[in-house]
Image 1 (cartoon, one colour):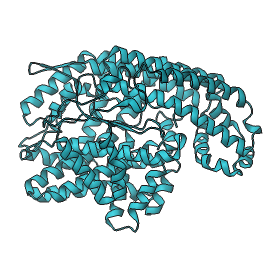
Image 2 (cartoon, one colour):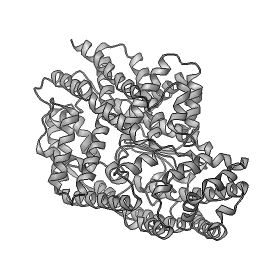
Image 3 (cartoon, helix red, strand yellow):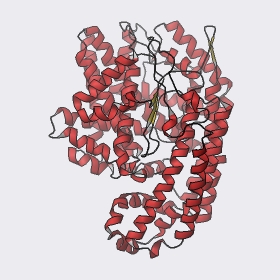
Image 4 (cartoon, helix red, strand yellow):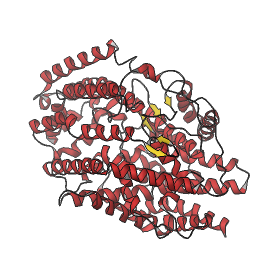
Length: 612
C-alpha cells in the first residue's frame, strides 16, 4: 500500500464546516467537516503528530535497519505492527492536507499547507523506507522460518504483494533519493496541473465558468449551447496547451527514466504489478473491449444520431440528452433516499454501512469555484472514516455518481477492519463496490419507472455511462500507451499528442462522429493521465467484473449478498482470483470479459427494439 494517499488539499478548516449552498433543485447540500481528522490547519495536534511520527520513525530505523533477517516471526510481526502505526499517523496528516486542498484548490494558503505537509511526511517516511526494501531482500528460507509464527500470518499477503516488486527494486540510496525527490518531481507537477485547472475560467454566455461548470454545459439540452461551450472550452485549453503538453511530456519522460532503472518492460507494467493483476489479464480485457467497439459504442451512437435527427454527431453531442428527456431535478434528500433504498433492498447490512455518510458530515456535495471537479471517495485511514467529494447538480447522472462514490465509501469502511496496510484494495477491485452500487440503484430506479418514454431515457443514460466506463476508459488507456511509447522517441508537440487523441477517439466511438481539430486538445484536462498513469483501465475492469458478478446475482447464486460483503471486507488481503472464486468466476477465463460486455450489448439490443 502506498504510504499515504494521493495529493490534493489544504487550509482553513472552518471553511469546510457548516451548511453548503443549495443545489439547482433548491435543496441545501451537505458539506463535510474534517474535524474528525484535525480541527484546523493550526491545530496543535498536527504539530504533535508530526513530531511523534518523526521520533517514532527515527527510533524504528535505529532499532530494525539491517536486522530483519535475524528476527523471529513474532518479532517481525511486532515490527510490521509498529510500522503500520507510524504509517497510519502519516496517512492521517496527508489525508487532511489532501481533502482541504481538494475543497478549495485555488486558495494559496491551502496550497502552501498542502505542500508543507507533503514535504514533512515525505521526509519522515524516508526513515521507514528501509523496511520494505529489506523485507524484499530476505531469502525464501528466512521468510519460511518467520512465516511459521502465527502472529505473522495476518501480514503474509502484504509481504507477498511487496515481493512482487522485488525484481524492480533499486539500492537503498537510490530508493531514498527517488522517495525524497518525489515532492519536487511528480507531486509538484501534479499540483501545478491541479492548480492550473482549478484557476481556469471559460467565458460563456457573459459568465466566467470553471472548467467543471463549462463541461457540464456539454450535456445541455440546447445544441447551440453545447456547441458554444465546446468552442469556449477548446479555446481555453488551446491557450494553455503548451503548459499541459510540457507537464505531460515531462512526466512521461520521468516515468520512462524510472521504469528503465527499475527494469519494467513496458510503460504500463508497473501499474499492473501495483494492481496485482497479470499482464495477460489486462491484455485480454483490452482486446475484448476493442473487439466489441462496433457492437457497443459504434452501434449505440448510430442510434443516438438518429434519435437526435442528425446525420453525424459532433463531439459535443456525445452526452446530449435525448429529446424526450425532461432532465427533471432530483433534490438531494430524494437522491439519498433512492440510493439507500436500493442498497437496503439488496442487503440491509450494506445500507446500514452507508447510512452514516448522510447522518454525519462526511460528504461535500455543492459545486463551487476552486473545488476539485468530478467526484471521489477518499479512504483516509481506518482509525477515522472515508470522505466523499461530489459536485451535485440534481440530475439523474448525479444520483448515479452518488451511488458510485457511496459504494467506494462503504467498501473502504468494511475493508478498514483489515488495518492500514491491508485495507487498500488494488485498483482493479477498487471499482467493484462503486459500480455494483450504481447497478443496484439503476435497476431500482428503472423498475420503479412506469412511463415507457422515461424508461428509454433511463436505459440510454445507463448505456452511455457504461460506454463511458468501459469503452472510453479503454480508449484512454490506449491513448496513454501510444503517448508513452511515442514519448520514448523524443518530446511530443501538442499537435502530435492531439493526433494520438483523435485517433483513439475515432477508433472507439465510430463513424457516427465527426471530429474536428478543436477536439484535439480535450485530452489535456483529464487528471488520471497526470496523477495515476494507466489507472484508467481499472474502471473498465471494474465495470465488466461487476457485470459478470451481477449476472451471478441475478441467476440466484446462493448466499450471494453475504459472499459479496465478505469480498468487500477482504480489502487488499486477497487477489482477484481468490475473491471471485466463491462466485465461480475467473478473470483469466477468455469468456469472462465477453460476459461483461454482453450486458452492455443486451441493453443496446433493448434500445434497438424500442426504437424499431
